[in-house]
Length: 210
Image (tube, rainbow, N blue to C red; front, side, top):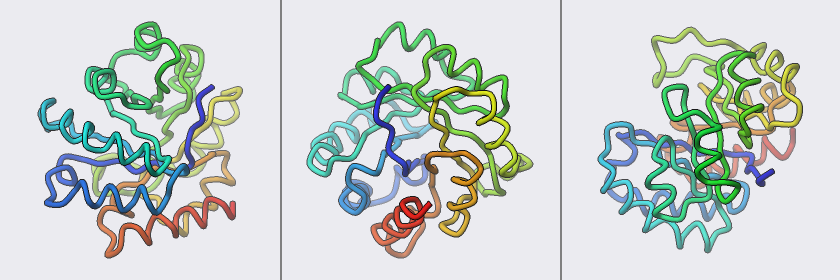
């Protein structure tokens, strides 16, 4: 089982397109070190741009001790030396990716119910994102499942670490951990913060206190 950091920082296309994004990513990685996994996610960003960004970020994650994950883009994860790949329900199945990468890369999956969670664990996922837990602008058409989803998923998986995602503010971290998660995944709570580095430290303080 790969070591899975407790704080996962997920991007979207808008975040990736921001001026100075490499500098911002460096800041949050320096603030969090080994406790942070940077998830490069850009559904509409072309593969060449993502590969170039990840190539720039690889030495920074090495220097800070952070982890570098690619969401969906197994091709970039393999060619740019990522630490892991994260799969959604429309991505390749976990067992297919595991067969391709062996245990050189961590493999994560997004799950939304007990069935998907059980399948992810049986197919060899190293961890799972569980959500959407709370209302969030990035999934404004989806009714949040609430903390009960984490509890119900925790009851059916054996050892797979769970990471809560969806509208998680620092004030909600403790509740998510109490429901059975090991960590949290965040987007706007860090990337839209006035000081992203300080925001990372606030989240980590809550995670370590839980």
